[in-house]
Length: 193
Image (tube, rainbow, N blue to C red; front, side, top):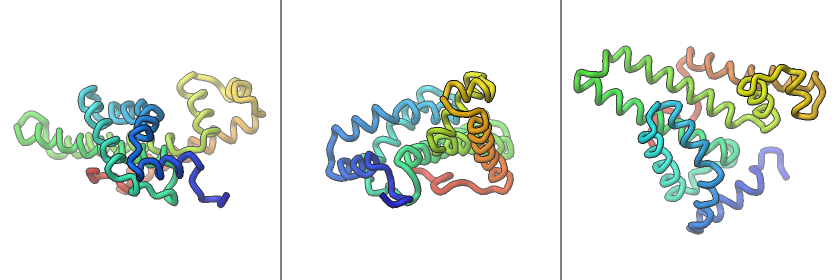
């Protein structure tokens, strides 16, 4: 298999979706719905809005299976990118509507809120797109409060390898902050589906 070829599951899933297999959409939904909903909820801080974004993302995937470009990454990262893009777009719409009604603060406050949400969405996208070993190490260290020794034991790797994974994961996450300061965002951000 070529180095940049997508995983076999991703290729098969895209082919099944392109053929219009409803079962494929169900399988994709089962695999990624929790990811989509949690990322949308993190940006929007609203259960109903997160539900709507989840429906929109899977609707878009169903209608546009060929929009997935394996050269840009895994299907998981594509779904995460779609989710973050749609959630940030919805946040901008919601906040702009509140601002127009006079209840949402200033334009500057709106932009700051959207910027913070975009940074959070980018961090989610980066973590979601990380190789599984890096993602597992970060989840153990930061969500389960394991130190690098405990992380190494839980993952069955050496302490040096655990430190390497944590360091690399943190370096990747630092790009979310750096790029946000530079005004850059990953492909697909800031546009509706």
